[in-house]
Image: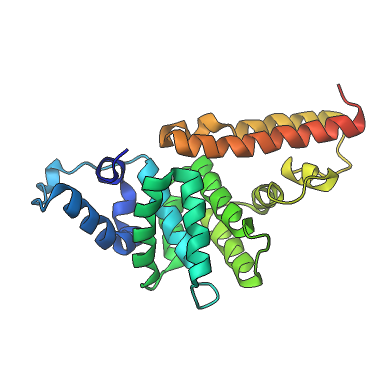
Length: 246
């Protein structure tokens, strides 16, 4: 998918507010390069997106990744390479190059993280916010360790996005070594839960993290959401095996 179609035709509410203020210049410059300079359409002809699009989620991700990278006051070449690999894995080589251009521009600016999160919370449905947080946590864990400042910022971002501690704990447990304790945390239940409670928790979490919840955001996002769904299934199977449940 070309950048102009992906963002120009797929960027809705994120082109306004604090996110638009951060990414607008870089995105606009790339669109001008691809399409050539164009006059702005009359206001009444501009499309207004009430629903979250793939572009909205991805630009939100870029801005929050930039905020996380700047948490310790410096951005290194190693961190940029790390993010590039993450973008390639999640979105493919072509989109990764374009996202890095936007990211580098955003990194030069002051990022009002709280205001960004408020904009996302007001416009993005909960399943998409869970996926956004899943991306951020996955990136934080990808180098094998999560720094204290990084962890604290992820906690604040989750709170501002309206993601509760149980969901945050479940998402975080998906990136830790699989064992009995992480299985229960993924299902958001204590180890003392009854077999019936385990089954109910599995059904609840499978519904919450089902890829169909973000189907409207495209194949890449739906595929990434499938990883959460798979972790829920694996956690349930782990507990089943330990308890001898049928």
